[in-house]
Image (tube, rainbow over all chains, first blue to last red; front, side, top):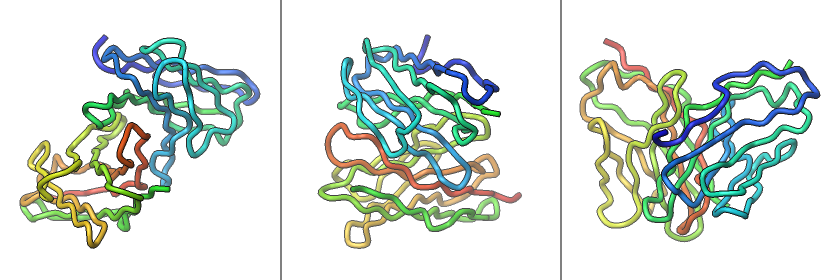
Length: 112
Length: 113
């Protein structure tokens, strides 16, 4: 693994189903983030974690939950998916030394 | 709260001409400013950043940006555009410290041969 990986690449999901998007980084970055990208709205922060064991809410957290059991993994869970959660989801990580965020390739989620 | 505005949804430029993609920001304290590029069906790639020091920042692929504190702007520029520069560009800001980036809505750049 090099950088950030996300799984699955894409998913079609029935409304009401539970779904977990996976994100793993191998750079030992302390901070990780989940964004959703929607046409005309840019990237909006869903949840973030400054360090393992802590999480925080972003701009659009409703309907999503996260956990950060260790440094490398930051899964995003949709407990009961709704069509408005159809989007492209990006995971990112950063450390306090570089300040920049590194992004994964994204997960395209369609909720029907 | 911090915010970023990218006033142009779309910028069209002829190949070989200079390009500018505009960005203004609002943040309390000293800003950390960033530009990212996104090619179709890909994640975001870092282009350049301003943290402190020289107001003119040089980045990847010949891009540069100028930090203007009085105008709260951080416009992205390139002296001579290439067709391969066609992509979606995002400006982002964060407060000092390890806070999440706040992104603008993006500007689609089209370079026409």
